[in-house]
Every structure is written in C-alpha cells, then in structure tokens.
Length: 120
Image 1 (cartoon, rainbow, N blue to C red):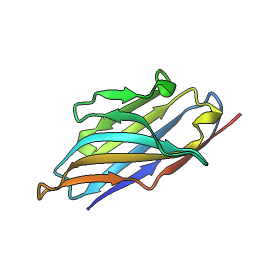
Image 2 (tube, rainbow, N blue to C red):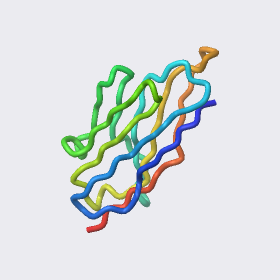
Image 3 (cartoon, rainbow, N blue to C red):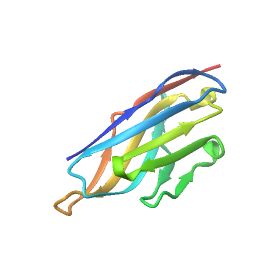
C-alpha cells in the first residue's frame, strides 16, 4: 500500500504564493509519474500539472507561468510552487502518484487533499 500526504495549503491573498508538498510512503519500488489535481466547490476534479520520473513537467494553460511542479526522487516527494495566486485558484489540491510496488504490481494512489483558499 502507498500513502500520499499533502501539506502546505492555507489562506493567502490574491497575488501571493504557496508551496504544496506531497510525500509518498509505503511499499514503493519506483514512482513513475506524479501529478497535482484540484477540485473547486461544485466542480469536477481537474488535472493541473504532471511530472515524470525524469523531472519533465507539463501544465494546463491556466497555470502556465505561475505554478511550478518539481520532485525529489530520493524523498518520494513532489512539490508545487504556486505564485501569483488568483481567487479562482481556490480549491482542494490533491496529489497523485503511480508506480511499482516491491512485488512488481502497479499502484495508482491519491492523497487526501489540502485546501488552498485565495482571498480577493
């Protein structure tokens, strides 16, 4: 089993910054892709950014130039630096990771989410 624990959410004014972290633990041989999703009230969960094991990041258009995804493979941790935050960025942010257990079976796990609230 793989557990993902997010941290770093909170309340920030528009234009401010936050850094989210997500640490994975458990039976992990290798983590392939990691990602950040978000879900705003009344809306579906949406993909925001992904990062490969080699560190290549991809972003949806509405966060390009403002948010940066990175990872520390030695710590099984993914980070999300969010700058120039807007009220519409308010959501619960979830991390996701896929990879292999030590027994070579695949995993695809989600964190519990962390609230980000941006005030105008």
